[in-house]
Amino acid sequence: MNTFGQLFRVTTFGESHGPAIGCVIDGCPPGIAIAAEDFAGDLARRATGRTRHTSARHESDTVEILSGVYEGSTTGTPVALLIRNTDARSKDYDRIARQFRPGHADYTYWQKYGVRDPRGGGRSSARETTMRVAAAVVAKRWLRERHGVVVRGHLAQIGEIVPSAHDWSVVEDNAFFWPDAAQVPELETYMDALRKSGDSVGARVTVVADGVPPGWGEPVYGKLDADIAAAMMSINAVKGVEIGDGFASVAQRGTAHRDEMSAGGFLSNHAGGILGGISTGQRILASVAFKPTSSLRLPGRGLDIDGEAVEVVTTGRHDPCVGIRATPICEAMLALVLMDQALRHRAQCGDVGEVAPRIPAGAAQGESPGDAGDG
Ligand SMILES: Cc1cc2nc3c(=O)[nH]c(=O)nc-3n(C[C@H](O)[C@H](O)[C@H](O)COP(=O)(O)O)c2cc1C
Image (tube, rainbow, N blue to C red):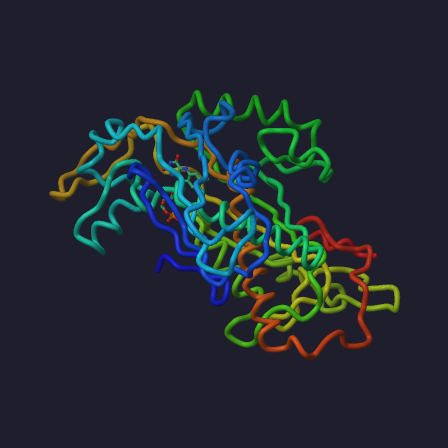
């Protein structure tokens, strides 16, 4: 399955160390202004090699638009995007070509296909997520221009460290997408020590969409929250997804969790902007857990393809915390889900129009699970 979405269908292709990666967007509405330069911003946010805290691989990630755009606008025909791989160092993988790295996808790809491309992790590499981010540039633009929807995210935890403040205005100013500028030096020191130790650590990303109107989402098997969860779980190294208060809901009382309403708006957002699989008009709030990177230079016990015990040592260029680069990827998947659901809503319910009464989103939107912004 290399295709995502029902009406806004994104198919990606390519391997980490193949000649190129790419995607085809089928079902893209016509008339969206897009140029090759428009992809640069989000691709740079996802890219490696920009700081010492991510992998040192340095790809230029230059997008070539092969089809679907004429005189600067989408035409409604398939939008094909291509990025050539220019900094693959496959030699780094010679040593582990016959080994299964503990915690990576080597063993399961081998079991499934009986063959695998070990260079840079092949198709299981997060290099593939570059094309999700590229496709989502188109989706984000349409969502913003057509519906005023803004999708954004921030890192919400590295190891044990959580933000002391949530200031969206500083998120893009630091390499960690961290919402508390005062903590950045602490993160730098933490990551430097981690890198030196040779170990890795997990992380949590918060991703939100503001401005989503009520009504998007399709019960019962195409629920908005179900689509978001599936989209996030499809990202490499994701081990958990929460919507709104998520697992914190377990310890809550109904009186606390239900989002009460007033004429001025909802009074809280424990639901994360979704009820019955349909958007409420409040902030869509999701939280995504990333596991620690499995490719480590610290020796680990593994097996090779002959079933022999081996000591696995992974050299080469790896992210010590994959979550650091994951914020734009989570944003991309949320944008792709919303774009697809918006088109699906328009297809079925485009004639329904705005239904009264429409409850304003309210001031209490929430910044992270367990913080529903109770008003
Ligand atoms: C942005 C990003 C960067 C990643 N970089 C690495 C990496 O450098 N080394 C590595 O072993 N895994 C990395 N991963 C994770 C692997 O791709 C992933 O763990 C592997 O494909 C196995 O799949 P699973 O963890 O989803 O089960 C990265 C993941 C993301 C999202």
